[in-house]
Length: 112
Image 1: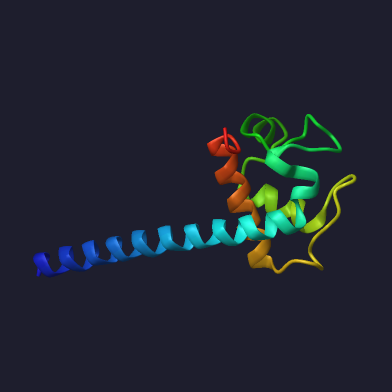
Image 2: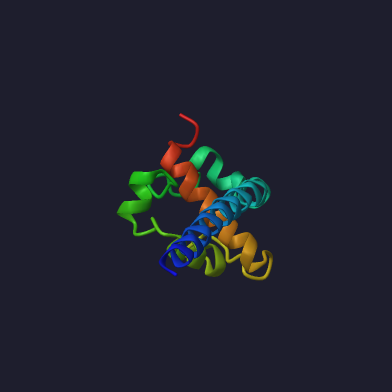
């Protein structure tokens, strides 16, 4: 019985890891497309043409409390200051994908 239980737990762990990694890859691929169409005009290469210090680089995201998917999703959804809200233009899954993409790129240094 213990061997069967261990086998089931192992199978679940493998499947969860495999599908989670695939979902993340798909999200960032979609995120890249959505970002390039909707965000790159102001944030090309992780920069910010309106407010330079508030760029999308890892250090700035952390400094301004924008270093989590939830924070980025809220910012993109609702806008803030001169940044427009995208809730009426993008689907929730597109906004989530943009957040995943921004965090991925900030970890990579935006192509350094």
